[in-house]
Image 1 (cartoon, rainbow, N blue to C red):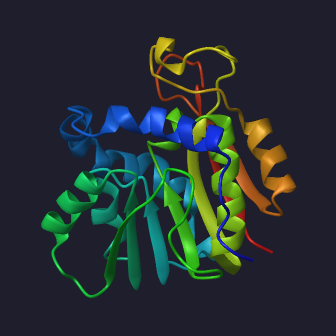
Image 2 (cartoon, rainbow, N blue to C red):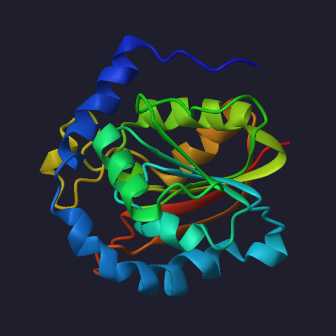
Length: 218
């Protein structure tokens, strides 16, 4: 397999979402929540030992300013920090320095900048919830290419179809059109196996607007 070239429309959709996350105040606001999110959401869902997740070569996709990379680094043998904005990647580099375990890269918002069968674990939290469904599927195709056999992908995505065909910025939490069922469908189309899924009440109002999905490459 070779790195996929997304259609122009998919690239445009990725860039449309990405433009809101260059100088976003959200990064500073979200940083203090990382510890709680890892303790109450991420680690309980992943169940790393039970699911056999291998973090030896991990990618933090859409890493922002690195709050999740800071949690992944102690567990990973090698960590790829990737974001659509070179400025965010530069800020991560300033945060973590020239640690030989870390590789930094800016991407196009649809592709994973690593060779085939490189990653043992792909991680994306609090970013894919905003991605257009075409972009999500493009990343699933790339995950199938970039993951080693038996590698896993953990994706935190939207579970809200209420604005299908509309502008995701009209949603009170900027959730794009996606669902747990659509994630299962796309994963099957791209040759990935669903290990587990669960809805997530991100808004704390019982609406379950988000979903967590753990995938495995055959």
